[in-house]
Amino acid sequence: MHPSTPSPAPWRGRFVVLAGIVLVGLNLRIAVAAVSPIVDVVRQDFALSATQVGLLGTIPVASFAVFGSLATPVARRLGLEPTMILALLLSVGGEVARALAGSAPEFLVWSVLALGGLGMGNVLLPPLIKRYFPDRIGAVTAAYSVAMSLSAAVPPLVALPVAQAVGWRWSVGMWAVLGLAAVVPWVVVIAQSVSARAHLRGLLRRAPRHERPAALVRAGAQESRIVWRSRLAWALVLTFFANTTCTYVLFAWLPEILADAGLGDDVGGRWLAVFAILGLPASIVTPVLTARMRNPYPLVVGFVACWVVGLLGLMLAPAQGTALWMVLLGIGPGAFPIMLALIGLRSRTPAIATALSGMVQGLGYGLAVVGPVGIGVLHDATGSWDQAFVVLLGLVGLLLVAGWFACRPTMLGAEPAA
Image (cartoon, rainbow, N blue to C red):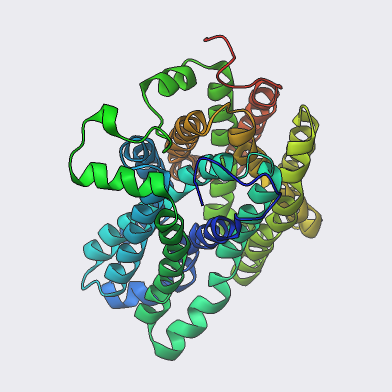
């Protein structure tokens, strides 16, 4: 198997890579979703302060931003497949270490490592799909988007029962097994690739740059310049930021919003699960449609409409029509897999896709960090959620405008610089 030369048949010779991509997708949200349901249990053991609990909500987005930005230069040096293995091992190490943590600060530090590895994986998957499946970007993006949705939906269902049965440390650490399983296909890919093995031998011998095999894709300075000067890339950043911020704000505050509306604490938790699960159908359908459409902007408009109606309904009548508002809000984040698919579809080469993915996800998550915290501060200052909803509606407006530019049928690498 050669990383830079995918098989001309639709899937033949690429099942190992497909398995690796799906297994990585199954890991991408576990380190976040496995902790939220057992925070109270961990809090009793470590006496976590309110500030530290708040940090647990901020660490995922911040780690995705910082480590996601590092993925591109590391991949430039090591290659995509070895960097993916490194990212998975970082995450596995962090998951095991935080399960063994002896204090709250240790738990937080190791959580950063666990989530940071996943942040690198976020960035690496789109260029890997571009490399191995340039003819199946929509279908493979759908496959790993579904896997990612499952990684967010399944852990909350089992984390607390496991913690109650054998302790929270097992509940947190057991997911490392899935991370190790995801390493195996990428080891096989490298073992079967002559160019990848030669590249790694060159690194170990500190070979000069011009002696490194050119077949292994590295996003260099030229690709980075193309991306950072591109209107398309900046539109993708803003679209990703707006959609991600709205999503993470609801993950952080939806139970409290519904509780303040008089629906009860338990009701908010159940609707949060519904909000997460409803992203699954969009993950299946949207990337495939995006790949088949010359301009997928009508899809973005549809998701924006769901956001607007759902947010207005939750703001004006949260206790009436709650089910309808939550269904619409659960569908709204479906613009996310569109952005993931466009990273590959709008990149002329895997090297450009690597640089673009690092920029979009690094900056997108970095800007989104302020969302949950800022909304909390705004609520504390005003004593109402109305202003928060106005901010979210403004972000949805940004999604609508930036999405128009992001979806234009432009190939990055042929577009004039901004």
